[in-house]
Length: 256
Image: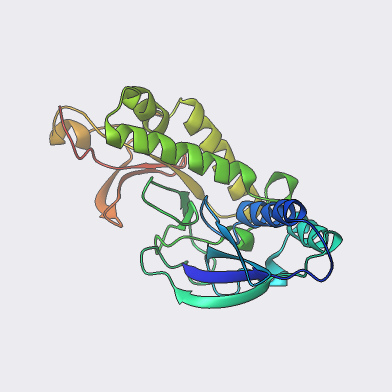
């Protein structure tokens, strides 16, 4: 990921409330278009300017060509509230996050995330690198809001099960059961992405538990009961892959 600084300047008298609302609206639309990544975007008032920092998938993520209609409308709203378009400064590569996938058409892609990752939840099947969402055909309403919301819910469940709190088993059900509400939402989004982009798009099912390695290796696809075990792991993450059901999963790392 790339760390960028956005500086907002006022060109006429306005109020902090108006500025805060206008900037927040723009940040929200940039987030749902995949141009910035994350959930928290502190905004600093300094020397009469408003400054915020954000992670971006690429150095050109905030270029006009990557905007959708909602982002452009939010930029227009800045002007309506006496604020100039933000000045963009690229600060450099952020070392704790993954770099985006090279600009190419992948043979397949997958919806994959975890609570420790700050990047696009759409990954290249060949490189396992995050794919910027704004480079893809848009989903409903011209943005990837549904996908970002799914990612946040998946990460919340992952955090709960890793912490081992009271809702651990409910959280595991959501991220590991093909028939859970969260999985059905994700599969529907993956199917829509595949339809729009004409690229096979898979959904990741998290796996933990089980009896032993042998029984794990004999698992069948939970949707079609087909043989989906791979001879070799893909990216040391996926040990199962069903091309008919567009599902991938892992061998359990913790047996009962």
